[in-house]
Length: 113
Image 1 (cartoon, helix red, strand yellow):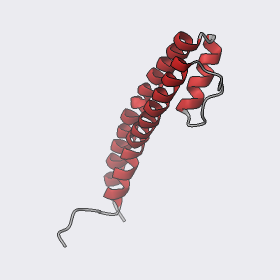
Image 2 (tube, rainbow, N blue to C red):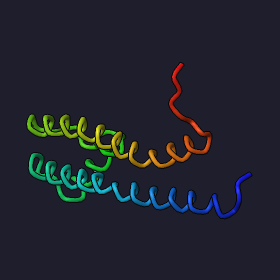
Image 3 (cartoon, rainbow, N blue to C red):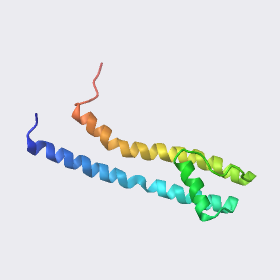
Image 4 (tube, one colour):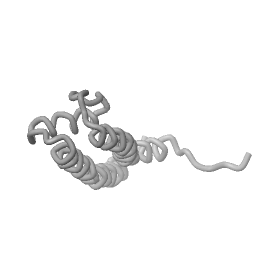
């Protein structure tokens, strides 16, 4: 068991690193705005409908409006692929401090076999 003075700085560093990585969620907001502007431009949707479709695609649920124009379908397909990559990247950023903390906790290191 570690001394109380030793565990505290590690915990503080972990929470600081988690807070820093949590601030990397701005790509989600930026991606939501891109989707809203795209749906508004290509489909002429209201801001609320554009928000709903963008949020559903970004969340992995799929689009709500299925009757799209040809240009709208192209935008929705590209936007869906983009959203998948953004979600994977942001999830990795959010999980990285926890995985790093776990690896330190179990003293996981590279070993030559």
